[in-house]
Length: 317
Image (cartoon, one colour):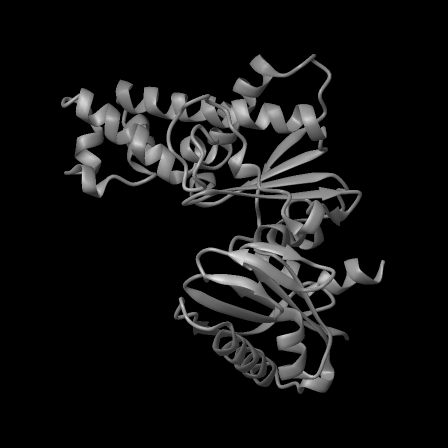
């Protein structure tokens, strides 16, 4: 049996898993990232997290084939340098070299969304599929592109930022600095903003039953009201789905993937939610012969760990 270690480096937590060759996480460790602080201290903690997870698996570092790191930001996977990660305040951090020095073994580094997308192709909803887009509907809109079974990250590792495709000229302000990005509309944050606007306009909406104040609105508020028969909640959900589908159609027209995997908190609405998205896509798609399918992500937060753990397979091919 071969063993690998995957690290999912986030702005809040460092999640580490020992993964066997059958894609099972057999042991874990978790530490606080405590960002923002110097990269060498975060690397110290990542190395400690690896040692803890390996110990928890009753293994030694000598039993591990390699370590993979999924990190926020733009990553040159060839050099292992993080060009920029805003939530960690990393600028040109040679994380691959720093981790190899601490662990004495081969380390591979990739953007976290790309690693999660790869995880779904290795062991999740897209297992065995060669051309895949993975979309995460969370605080933002994360994305990963898999072409011919490999991660596509563009020149210098800066590609694959699917959340920052413009869909509304002069639209809502996005965290990236532009206006009108799909992230500003199809993220959970975008849904919350749509919900708040509808609640302010319709004081008789049942959405107020699920959020007593605008500060309590969540990504579930409009869905809960819709399920309870509220017309305004239904309108919010439909508007949200239209924005999401509009962006997905653009991705389909560009990449023609076999599969789009959708994850994140909003995806927990399940197949009824996907059915709405499919309907809107069918109304907008170029031509009628598209073979792109939609599926719910299967691995949840484990996708990043599993994808990172198998990054070495990409480097060796």
